[in-house]
Length: 174
Image 1 (cartoon, rainbow, N blue to C red):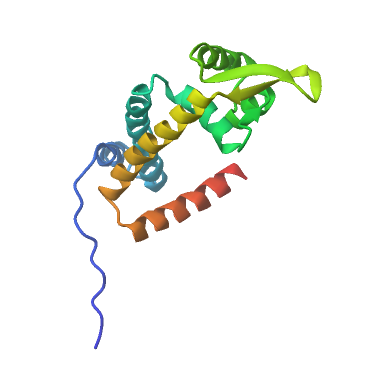
Image 2: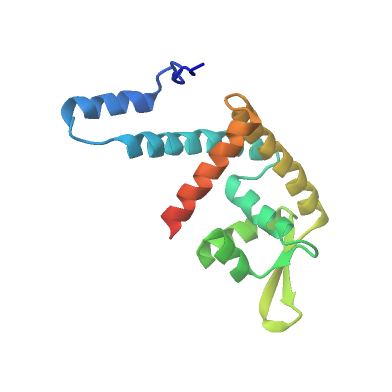
């Protein structure tokens, strides 16, 4: 018994399809396969980022502030890092980091103190309120991401997509 070739299901068109069609019209010599992938990744990133901003806004923080709190939370107890470690992890300038730390400190979500091992350095530490808030905010952000994935993909396809993106990211960052 022979198997039928797998047919590709018809998918609704998206804005990237329109862009690809336009390029095909004016430059049929171009291979736009990469544009199809990265165009969708960029549009998806913007759409999810907007949703994540709304999720974090309910907690009185923006995405960048969440990133600082989450980095401290992921570091484990005592939830403390140096401003330099935070800057390096988040790929921020020291000036950009200082502004975020100032705002989060004023909100009572973290505090800065002298580093006990180096009097010239500082430690940034989550407060109890910062820990509570980031734990709630990470749940809200994950709910947004999970909802977006489950609307389009089952667990198997989600895993495949994660693997493919990991491969692409590793090759791109080499």
